[in-house]
Length: 348
Image (cartoon, rainbow, N blue to C red; front, side, top):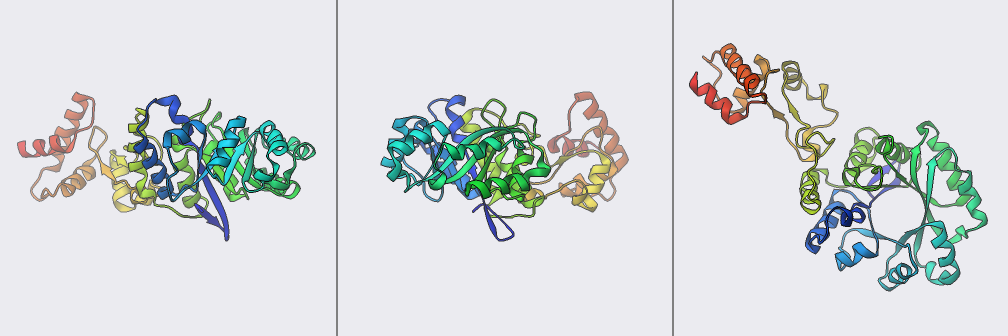
């Protein structure tokens, strides 16, 4: 389990590698396997694969459970042949699978995926009971959820569980930039699963960002999260290598620049109490705090940087150093890196 709330298990499913073939072809098999292993170590419980990604993997890695995506009849046969214990499919695929493979399906935990635009309009989910035998259904995945009133989550999820007797999996899309919030609110209000992707990648609008869901569940939701989130920078580098994409420096949780600070009041606040500006520490996500110098820096920032670089502050004209450093930053229209700052101090 990735997380626990009030003694109840909550699970995280990642579907990042489903999106990989659309980003870059011929990804090395070793990288794909390493990525799956790393996902498991970070805290992912299930990895969703389809026929194409399973063939690219060659074999399933240990330490993580897999959910096989069924879209065609040959996918169903592959699911049985390779011993998958979990599968996910749409309502049409499920209806013919129940007719042709009813006994075999009893050995697999099946998740029914249904597109839901607005979580408040879930009446048609209840109506599905008239067309589909829910006796063998393990869970129902609500995909989309681009319009969701989060305040009603507890009642909505409770109703689905009561009428259908299934586990609830949320797979929110990021059309209105609220997928992560929807996923975390769902976990806190009774959802058993949240399906996400690294960085929120994939699909037409993107999905809930895996790293944000994990951290928010811990920091905001108070869930006891399993997994080592200090591995997230390593996971990001592997993702960049596999896809050829560069994760933006300001990307929440995994961006290189999120713990960099410059202005005087920020520097002074960080020095006195990091919680003033940081809802979580850099050590929780495998990063470190970085003081950078630029045109917004003040004397406190210069003093902190001198101490950081083990340069004796005694006898140094901090005001003169600050003046020269600011002038250089303005002239070059960028921050002043440590090497240039040291050279500037030596000049003085």
